[in-house]
Every structure is written in structure tokens, then in C-alpha cells.
Image (cartoon, rainbow, N blue to C red; front, side, top):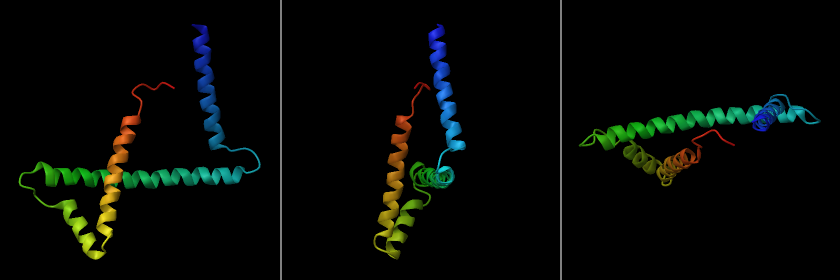
Length: 118
């Protein structure tokens, strides 16, 4: 029983060391490492907000166009058609971004572990 506890403590200690090294980088390139860390977290924030917006838009489209019979409004369908009329590939590109986001969200959800084991 004591051996399992010490291994668990070692894992927690390694996690703490990694978090400290990330927060307070050491060495010759500490400033560069800190800047990259800050930019990484800012990028995660921007992509998180973008992902939230895409998720809300998908949910609105499902509610407005798919769940209501007859459809109340051709929400995203109309947006993609209008983008296609503005420039030939803009609607296709926007549709591809929405589909790619949906697939990546499903894959990300599938890969999350149920139990927080390492």
C-alpha cells in the first residue's frame, strides 16, 4: 500500500515540476520560452472563442432549420449560398470549415478519457 502511495506522490511531483517549468522557464532562452508560452495560451483563448461561436451557430442551425417542421429559416444554408455568390469558393470554404470543426469536435470528444488515469 505504501509503494502505491509513493508512486502517486512522484507522479504529482512531476506534474508540479512541469507546471512550474512552464510558468517560470529557466535557462538561456527563458524570455523566449515565456513569450511562446504566453502566445500559446492566447492562441488557445482565440481558438476557444472561435470554437464556442461555431458551436452556438451549429446549435442555432439545428434548432431553426432541422427541429422545426417546416423549417423556420434556412439559416446556414442561406449564409453559404450568399458566400458562394460573393466569391465562388468562399461558401465552399466556409462549409468545409464548419464540417471540419464538427468532425474534430466529435473526435476530440471520443478521445477524452472517462477516468482521470495516466
